[in-house]
Image 1 (cartoon, rainbow, N blue to C red):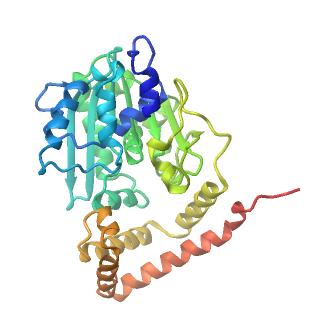
Image 2: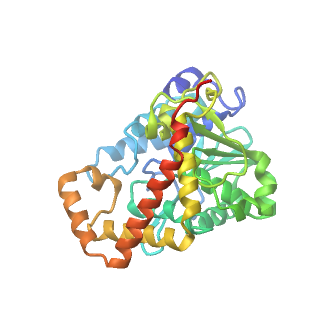
Length: 366
């Protein structure tokens, strides 16, 4: 990303058209803490990235300003964007960030005028909150999760305030929300959408893939996954994904900062890795062997255990792991026997599925 900003940062979008690299950069921007910097939909105003950087830097001087982004590179990214001609004048507005533990929803989005007669609506992926990850897992047994419904409402609400044609996108769950919103928004909004970017995002249930809304935007979807994708292989996508190169390995390839770029595109890989195909086949086999009720009970039981252990975010699992593990084990002892049986049975099904698909890890010879 930073190389690209150095290469193309002096060219605005009218001279050098929007491309897939711009998509991942602006998708990454959505992860930043932008409260009290980017105006909300109700405020009806906007702020340039250049000015947002200056406000952001001032807020960083305040010890009470909490950065909740997942990536250490994020503060450097917004500074790089602000100092470039290409991104500095882009207008940010319509920022929302909503986490509701009771409804099990984590939803955040913003709009960006790119100065080329287009607007880009970006949905944030999963943040560090446990409720955010719980909502992701809910996708395996719920056909619609709250964040998806919110995304469609948000797109329809913001569309009348957006200039020109529309691009919609996001990373991880954000990419899933972008596809869902584009498929389920009103016809008037949908006709203005020219591109939908899904960056290593989980898929959907077959009923959504078969819907008329999805069929109407299917040919507008640009889906990208790294070679060792895991998240982007979950559930059904209904269209082919472009495999791209990453400088990282394994799960770390999920980070957009690791995706390799050329002058104006993402660098393609020949195919996904054997490990990615193994995970893909294993998860598919696993989900096929357990029904929606068992999936829901399994995920609810794990969520209960983490809540009982007072774990509110992913960072809680990293910090003081020894004491955290102790709390988790203690809370595990506190759940009833039926829940314990569900956990054991579901994990056993996962290992069985992995065993069946183990040959995908072995390179076949003549």
